[in-house]
Image (cartoon, rainbow, N blue to C red; front, side, top):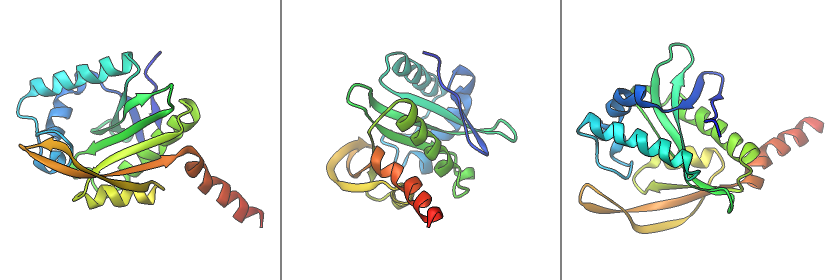
Length: 191
């Protein structure tokens, strides 16, 4: 299976390859990016190279998909977004993302997530997309809720990062819930 390239108005979601090693390192070496990422910040470019190998291996084994987020206007690599724990048989996955702080609060993450949700539900035929978010990560929790995700509960000491345990929230969005806004807007226009 070829890696799917996706597009939005302002973004291209592309396969991450070794040419993106420096960009990945520049993003994941920042404390403000990795604070709620579930892994310690990168301290060597080798870590970025190995992560790209993991992304490619997981895609080949149909266990995950990770896109690079690139601005259409200048081809700038600004972050990644992906489906982790992909289970095609059980029709579920968990979404994860990070973006360089220079591009925060510009709507890029929301735009990219909406397209990955569309692809997940329409092309991959998934039924459930989950998201694990640090309790302290209010920006991500708010973003997911704006996109229709429901908070299911709390996972105590779920992640271990920087030598300590972190409790997280669990969110999910089911296909039928994702389809609702489109159906509701059709109903509104029909009236």
